[in-house]
Length: 185
Image 1 (cartoon, one colour):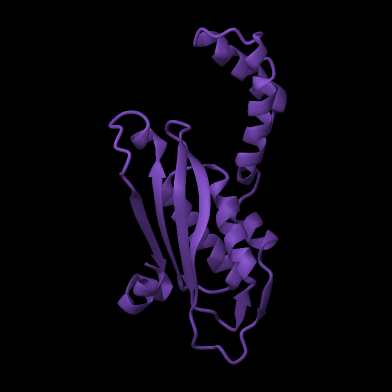
Image 2: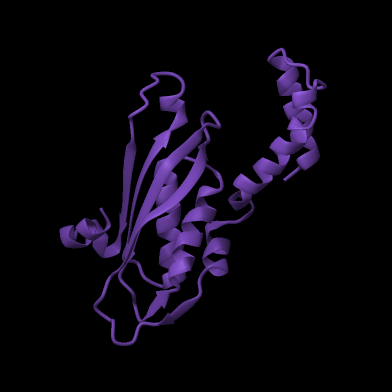
């Protein structure tokens, strides 16, 4: 990420909206925004494969061969690629059927967090998480459900503050198995 270029352009943006970037409250804003973007868009630096390798720590699933792993209400936020608007109050539910190995539980949350740290669409975020979990856990059977609010709908445009978006991504057995789908919804 080119921090100097971000600072330069944020300063230009402030000028373009009629602000004085040299006034006291804004003097350090370009630098702050650049550091913030570096942090909240960290996932941009990694492919889905990279994230799967980073957080792919697995353990033997001995004795739990027929179980399904379900983790619900993982909190993430992201930025909409259409308006650079915050997608917030987002919760991710993930479920997968292990194939001899299980992911460390914190790794599931870390995968969701890192995939969200990109300019995203909620639909693609679900697909990205599904793909990463599938690779990291070594199973095609993955379900991802995301619920969230989008400030491009709540704070501008239609300004519907209560609108929430739910997306589902089902792969493998989750595509057809209503019982598996119900575990993640």
